[in-house]
Amino acid sequence: MVILKSPQEIEKIRISNQIVAEILLKLKSEVKPGVNTLHLNRMAEQMAQEKNAKPAFKGYRGYPYSICASKNSIVVHGFPSKDALEEGDILSLDFGVLYDGYYGDAALTIPVGRVNESALRLTQVTREALYKGIEKAVPDGSLSDISHAIQSHVEAAGYSVVRKFVGHGIGQMLHEDPQIPNFGKPGMGTRLKAGMTFAIEPMVNECGHDVKILDDGWTVVTTDGALSAHFEHSIVITNNGPEILSKMNGS
Ligand code: CO
Figure 1 (cartoon, protein in one colour):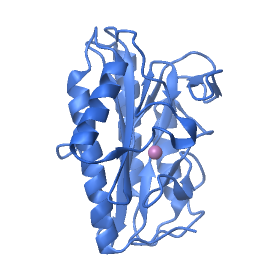
Figure 2 (figure 1 turned 90 degrees about the horizontal axis):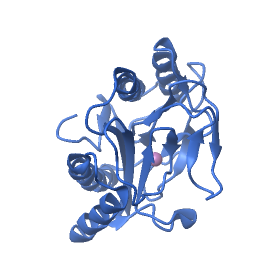
Figure 3 (figure 1 turned 180 degrees about the horizontal axis):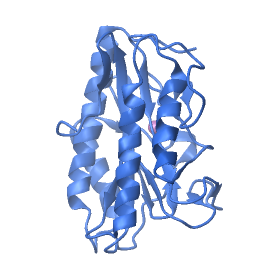
């Protein structure tokens, strides 16, 4: 069941997502060669605490950290590590909080120092695909219009969308209905309505779409070892179209 949110609830989800956005932007500014992602995890925890927000992922189904830090061929759910980031890496940072009873959730992929043309293009196409999906989040649209727009943009660029992980509704729970796949035929699934709040999160592989989970039970990697990128925004559908709740400095 997809839960429609009242204006008061939407405001709370907006506040949670603004906390997430602010923290992710701060983490982004720290990303450079030599920095390790455990340090980013500690920073995120400290900033959340200062805002009286609870990191949403730590303890979620036993996930052991507050951020997901997914480098290069890691698709999502990478553990923060003490290994230094290196020039040319791409790093996805995913973060969520619970504040005043409502969740925020967003992610972005960041180039570490100077990265090669193909890695940069992968991250740009993934970000564009997120925005193509968000554009379809309008009243009276179909859920799968979002999925289809993402898949079309990704495949036109020669990449593939991950099929085993999906976006989701968000609100008083981190993961609510509906599941939002990043692929599919248009015109199917839930009829979209004003007041729905979604976390849309394309995961895009440079080569094949297949992924596997490592023995730690969490880390999702591309089966072929190629690069992967990930962007996520939480949005609300309004009568005037989609509004991004996790906007970072206007973008
Ligand atoms: Co999410």
